[in-house]
Image 1 (cartoon, rainbow, N blue to C red):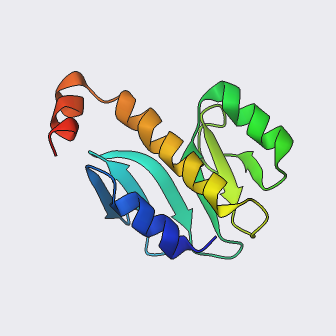
Image 2: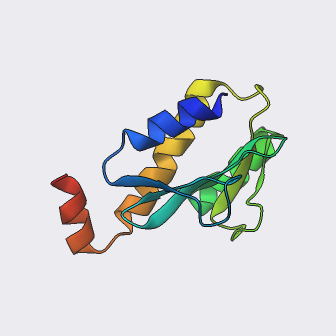
Length: 117
C-alpha cells in the first residue's frame, strides 16, 4: 500500500486535516481535531488506526502485519505494517472504520458541524 493513496483517501473525508505534531516523519490525520490515523514514514512503513476493541484482537490474530498500536492505547489502536501483504482495499476499509469510530465520538455540536461541511 502506498502511503500517498492513504493520504489522499484521508484528505477526501469531511473535516480532515493533516498535521505533523510528532515531526515530519509521522503525518497525523485528524477529524475536527481528533486523531484517527498516524503514519510512520520510517521503514518499515506503517499506520496506526483506531479500532473497536472487539475487532482489534480479531485483526491481530488474523493478520501478522497487524499488531497492538505502537505508543498507543493497545485496546483501541492497531499498528498495520504496510508491506503489501494486506490487500489495499482492506486497509482503506480499516482507515474508514477508524475515521467513523472517531467521528462518532465527537461532541454532538461537532458531529452536526461535520455533517454540514
